[in-house]
Image (tube, rainbow, N blue to C red; front, side, top):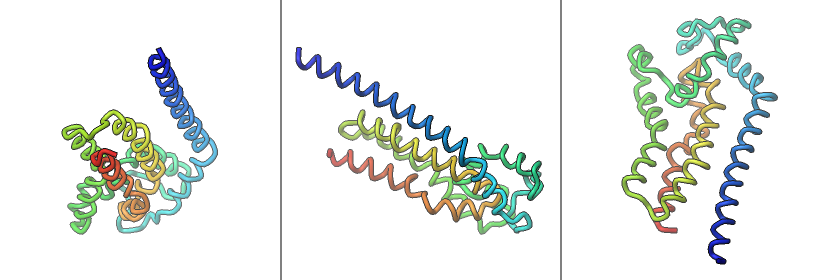
Length: 187
């Protein structure tokens, strides 16, 4: 009877904690969107020189330092979540071959969390359920949040995308690897 009560309490706490985490995430995202997002977008838009060699203003048809250009820039933010991490696009590599290592590195960095997860599923560590919970409820939201916050800075210049990505890219490859190692050690 006591063990059944403990199981019910654990289930109730688990459901409440997941609801609390989702609620906390929604509140945090809402606050950032209401109070910080437009300022962050403007800083990213105004911080890139339109006449720079690697500028994407012309490619995306964005008029620099204009209201219409800013609105067009905002429409590319979802694309920026990916190209902000990857850096140069394949056709940019054809124009400037020196971008090739950065493209390869960016694709690997973007895919590394999923590669680690795939390896963990094929070679499950002890406590795979806890690993899954830590991966999907802790690590992946952090990765997605970083991608969204970095997106404005990676849309208009692949060099800026690569430079600014280095401040947080360890969460893409090192954090999942350390999480897997911890669970593989059976801790």
